Structure formats: structure tokens, C-alpha cells
Image (tube, rainbow, N blue to C red; front, side):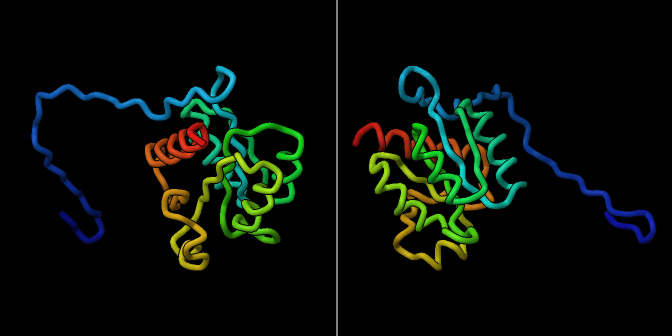
Length: 156
């Protein structure tokens, strides 16, 4: 219902259920060495980086974040990570180039790309669908993609 000068009122009617709500666990990976997996996030946008870190942290993963590919390469050269999540479009070295460089340093490190639709179109087949977390994403989708990337790494 809308009335000029007074605003709009929206009513939503949902069907009643007597079922009890259940919550499915998200992200069950225990990582390597008995603790949760350690993830390196690379995104040049500070706000996106902060929100994504909070989201992944809520899943129980140990998360570290940097703002550029160069910072990521420096960290990967000195620390052990179980997964790299990188934005695709960044100034300087983009996420696809970063993944190529990382594979020379640590061929076993799985890479998950965080990308908008336009980014995927630009890079085509280099960004396989299973390796892309499309923005904007929900926590459950992030959990599934992270879990799949970590499980694939363990199998290889």
C-alpha cells in the first residue's frame, strides 16, 4: 500500500509450517596439522577485503589479507597457506597473473578466484567455473567453494 506523503507499507504472507528449523554446518575442513585451514585473501578494495575476511573468519578459517599481488607473493614466499583467494581485477598484477606466479612457488596451493561477471568474461576459460567465487556471494556459497578447493588439494 502506498500513499503520497505518507510512504509505502509492504506485507508479506508466508505459509505456516510446524517443521523445526535446522541449520546445516558450513565449512567442516579441519585444515592441515589439526587446525583450521589458513587462507590468504588478496583484494585491492579495503572494504571488500574487510567484509570477506569477517565472513571467512566466521566459518572458522584462519584468514590473512593483503591488498596486492606483490604483497601476496611476499607472504607466500615466507609462510605456509592452505588456500589462496584472489580478486581477479586488481591494479598492477591481476589475480590470474598472480595465480600463475604462485604456481611456480607452490604448485600444490589451491587458488580460488573472487570475481564479478565481467571479470570471468574477460579471462574466459582461464577462470574455470568451479574455481570462481562470483561476487556478490553469500557465506554458504563461500563455504562450499572453500571446502571444495581444500578437498581437491587434499586429494591431489
